[in-house]
Length: 85
Image (cartoon, rainbow, N blue to C red):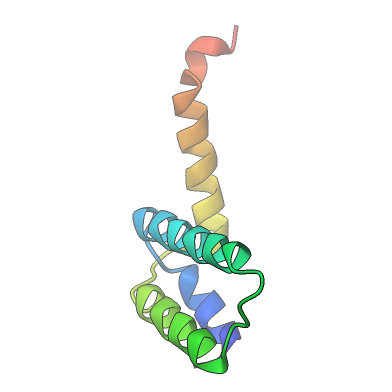
């Protein structure tokens, strides 16, 4: 599976799975930043890609639908229509 295929399949993940994926990526980025002196091996990169592929394999939403749902959630969290006036 190529990186493009992985990215496309992320669009099909549920919102909960996309949030979980984002959290995992943030953790991995933090680990990378914490170990500036440590060189990331090809094996580590392959391990991360395989992990992402597994998480993205059950994706169901397009990125556009995800963005719309996220905006709706934010709108509701901010009070929805009660704050319009």
